[in-house]
Length: 131
Image 1 (tube, rainbow, N blue to C red):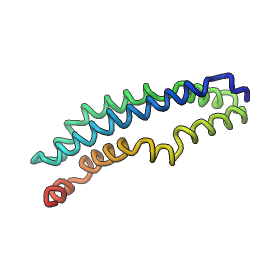
Image 2: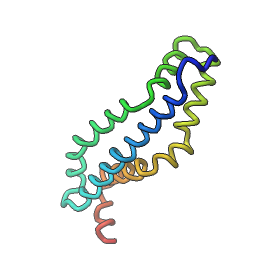
Image 3: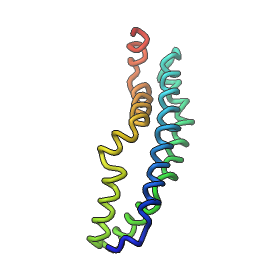
Image 4: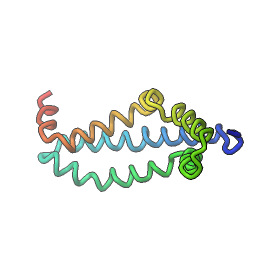
């Protein structure tokens, strides 16, 4: 595939902005809200109320996703071109593969996972408060 369809430096910059948003906004806010909910008398109710903050932040995260990757996905879906698929897989693995997501988005993964645990596991707050 002719790689002049997009600028990889631009994709790199947008992937970095996406990672920065996930970590510095969504991850930290989710962790902070989760920690705040643990200190409330009714953890589940508090975490459900805070979904009003988390959901818009999650929706906003989609706006930071590199549009070039989205365009390549759409192009592949329409054309089924194997070279487009190869280029798309290379970009996804380079910027959004398991290793890069785990290392680059640790704060996001930790914060959001903690929030989800607080939301979904009612006895967690009692356990944390005992520590």
